[in-house]
Image (cartoon, rainbow, N blue to C red; front, top):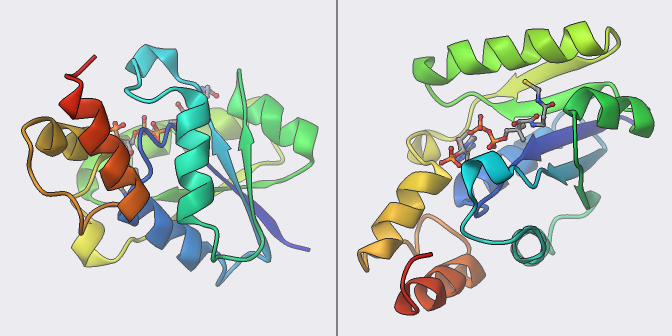
Length: 162
Ligand code: COA
């Protein structure tokens, strides 16, 4: 069985991430969405809320597994015995950062390769931060994120941003 690991912070998951998950199945039989706590980014949603939103958003996609991983991605890959990392490459501006991460991960685990997928153009400008910013000002994000995520964002910003 060909397995790919799609790592990220997913704060929160967007339609762009889901597009990448769906595209991954052209190559892989199973996709593990590996959620990093990533405290450096000061996430809006805690890790369990993020996992819950991913679970809901992917519940109709078979062969998706969701896991939390802490520490180095390369170590997690070794522990799982999986050799392929999936990342979306949205624009030239992603390239440098993604190139660095792919090479660093390969240096840390020589058996690992990163596979880059192009998202659909309609999502190629999305980031989780942009969505949070729009939602924080009461903007409409319903076409950009799954319904449950839009609901969570509304509730969170009604209470006022963290
Ligand atoms: N659609 C929409 N948004 C997308 C996207 C897509 N297809 N692909 C990426 N993005 C967004 C993400 O939501 C994120 O937005 P944000 O910065 O507003 O939160 C941004 O683009 C990419 O951020 P980046 O930091 O590159 O990725 P990430 O937060 O998704 O995940 C990890 C980064 C978790 C994979 C990385 O930090 C990691 O591996 N951490 C573990 C520690 C480690 O091993 N470090 C060494 C490896 S270099």
